[in-house]
Length: 288
Image 1 (tube, rainbow, N blue to C red):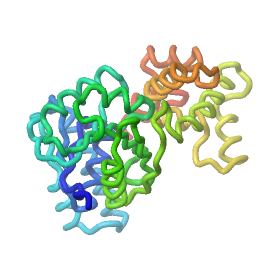
Image 2 (spheres, helix red, strand yellow):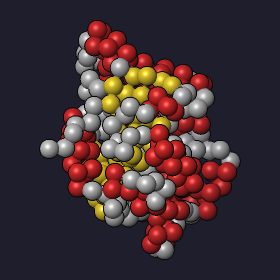
Image 3 (spheres, rainbow, N blue to C red):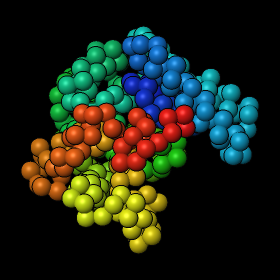
Image 4 (spheres, rainbow, N blue to C red):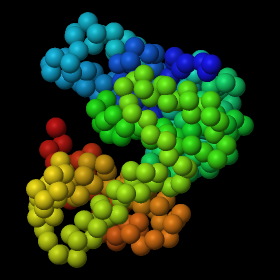
C-alpha cells in the first residue's frame, strides 16, 4: 500500500501556486509556499485571504474554518522548510531552464521517497525529470486557473514515472477535490493540445481584421455556449503564458496551428499581457 501524501510544498507564490496551496489547505492538509523573496509571499497571502473571504461571504465555509485554513499555510523564503514535504509542486515561470534549476535544488533538499511535480502546461516532464536523480518520482500535476474552483488536474506521466508515484498523486488530487486525468508526456498534454489552436485562430482572425474583438468573442459565447470568447480567455490566461505554450507546442510538433501569430509577440514585448497587466485584447480596471 502506497503512503498517502500529507504535507505539500509549493515553489512559486504566483496565482497558480497560491491557488494550489489554498486547495491543499481546504482539504485540511499542511501547505508550505516558498519564494526566495518576501514580497511575492505577501502578495500570495493576501490573494489567499481574499479568496477565503469570498468563500465565507458566499456561505461556502464558516469563519472559524477560514482561520484554520489560513493557518494551515506557511509562507517562507527558506527552501529548507520544504524538506519535510511528501510532495512539492513547482509552479514557477514557464521556462525550462528555470524549472530545471528548481528541480535540481528540490532533488537535493527532499528525502528520497518525496515526489517532485511540475504545474507546467507544456514542458515535457522527462526533460524536467532529467535534472534529478529520482526520475521515477517526477510527474506533471497540471492545475487550471482559478485552482480552488477548477476541478481538473492533468496527471502527466513521464517515461520513467513509476506507477506508485501516479497512484499517490491520483489519491492526492482526489483528496483535494480534483478530478485527475492521466495523459502521456507530450507537449500541451490534453487540454492545451485542443485549446491552443482554437485560441490562436481567434487571434489570427482579429489580427487579419476579419471581425472585431467583440464580434469574435460574442460569436463563441452565443453560438457555442462558451463562458468566454477566445480573446477574453487569452487575456484571462495571460498572453505571455500562452506564447510560451505555443512555442513549446510548435517546437515539438512543427504544425502551423500551434505557432503564435506575430501580433502575440508584439503584445507580449509591449507588456500587454491581459488581465494581470490591465491591458491585452481588452482594457481592465487595475484596482479590480
